[in-house]
Length: 132
Image (cartoon, rainbow, N blue to C red):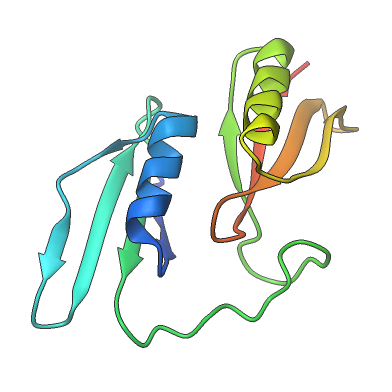
């Protein structure tokens, strides 16, 4: 069995598509549009084969969870793996220099990872990790 994909609702479909394409190498498909439902989406495919579905549709309520300061039940982050500690550091520096907040790290964790945490343009929590 494989893990097929994760989906994110957004009010910023093109911005999120560009973010995940530019910073994480996601290759978007052609935009799907269902005019009857005012639904639009992209699937982005990553080098590992994992996919991320970005979706927009009017009247989807905003997420009320605080993703920056407090954790909550449910899916809390997406993690992107890189090959080296240097690659983690370089990605953190790139995102920071481009104006994205680094929540923690880069740092070594007690469970064998070297990682940092950041937020995408919609404040979804992300980790960039490697093992050490």
